Amino acid sequence: MAGAPDSRLTGTFVGVLLLEAAIIAVLWLVGRIFQ
Amino acid sequence: VTRVDWAIVLVYIAWIVVDGLRRSKGTDRVEGYFLGNRSLPWWAVGLSVMATQMSAVTLVGTTGQAYSTGLRFVQFYFGLPIAMIILSVTVVPFFHRAKVYTAYEYLERRFDVRTRSLASFLFLMGRAFSLGVTLAAPSVVISAILGWTLSATVFVICVPMILYTSIGGVQAVAWTDVKQMFVVVFGMSAAVVVLLYGILQHVSFVQALRLAGATGRLKALDFRFDPRETYTVWSGMLGGLFLMLAYFGCDQSQVQRYLTARSIGEARQSLLMSAWVKIPLQLLILTTGVLVFVFYLFQTPPMLFNRVYDARVKSGPHASEYAALERDFGAALDARRAAAERNDREAFLAGDSRVLDIRTRAAALVEETTGDERFTDVNYVFPTFITTRLPVGLVGLMIAAIFAAAMSASGGELSALATTTIVDFYSRHFVRNASDAHYLAASKFATLCWGLFACVVAMYSANQGSLIEVVNRYGSIYYGSLLGVFILAILTKRATAAGAFWGLIAGMVVVLIVAFATPIAFLWHNPIGAAVVVVVGLAVSRMSPSAPDAD
Image (cartoon, rainbow over all chains, first blue to last red; front, side, top):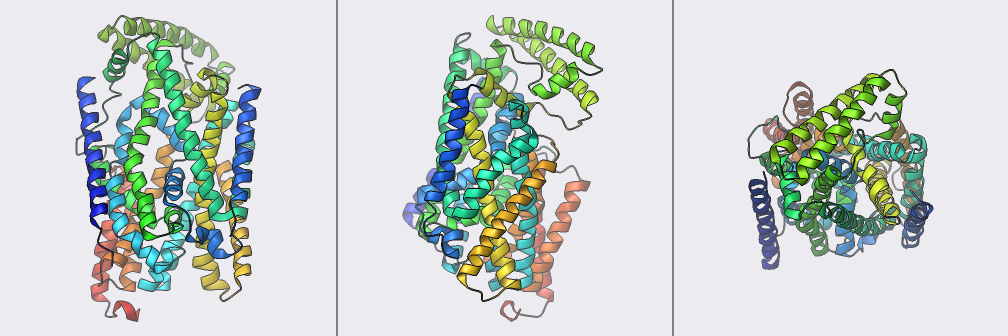
């Protein structure tokens, strides 16, 4: 089965998810301000 | 389009062909031809993954969508980063350790040959026709913009692409993809600079955002849970997640990209590059479309961007009506521009809806004149902007980028079609135990044949709907079901060969019914297909007495 991710990979995963959350937050904010 | 621009296009196309062939060293064996001897660096694989997904349809169709409806298409990609994370810890190490050439090869090891053959067949059918669309969609637009015939345009895209793909194999494809990504990002960034320069001559940046926002184009997120709505946060997060899992995990055109990486670690990194970059890159493309909208608030746009249809209506039976509409259009544009400049929101919105109304009436006249019921003008917006508003040199670069995008997306798909044909069918069912040289020659011949087939499909494909959705819709009919089979294969131990086979068939049937008999939006077809395959597959496995190994 699949190999377990090491800590560096886990860090990358968290970073990716944080970036996506930040993008969604910015898009939401831009949509609210300029409507 | 000046001679300088044409020279740039020619030099660029010649360069990618020559360099593609030059880099195809080590392709004198099948593993080199199909998998680049599993030796490519992660960044090249990562760029190749993105380039294969970013076709000319993405450049032309996405900017057009953003011009007309704004940023909301970005939601389509919300599932992608999560899908990449899931794939990089599940499928990537799995396929690399299994040393397979195709994703479907693994299905025979886990289940049986009929599941493998059915999955490969579904891929071949779906991908062969979508390759036709990948080629047809930009060809239709490019031919209308440049005044070429459709056949000539398909020819110009297909000949170099088939040449370097069939001779150079996957390495030629990958290195062409790398160049394409640089050209696309540079070209789009330059277009944004030109757009901003043009807009800032009339209004401030904040005012430009207000104008785009007033028309709803900056409202990227839709939190409503309505399965009939194509793009919402939920359809992107969940439907998009399943689509991306299926596309990057089960579609040979993507799996083959990361099978060329040197190691599991590098293959993972190549996928995670998309997880980081894809949404920002897509936002760049969508923002460009929105900026084109704002740009044309202050510059006079044509009433219809498709100049071929424009000319046909002008010389057709509705010419006088069309001329009257053009006069109204000019007045409406002036009113909208004046309102935008004096920051009068109500008058601006009234002017914008009048412009939209006139364009809708003009499109109706096109439909009546040409009989083309699926006419959509948005796909011509960005190419029109490129050819009429960009400075000399940049026009050539952007046209080259569109050609290159068409070629590199289809090159990857073509290589995958040939690989699946040879590995999953020819060497499995027809000619077993032949020499490597024999399979290599057969592989090159298969690449050539699929290339020619795609060209024929491209020439006969109808121009339907907004281009990008057409391609994605084709995929969503079978992607979810394919994903379901791989979930059964990799994540369950109880699934049997019979379960996988009948589950796959049940998934396809249900998705076809859902697609044609219900209003459920296409992104939801993916989780539905996957769920049906898993549920039916496990149920049949429970009923069938044989253990997985015995199948």
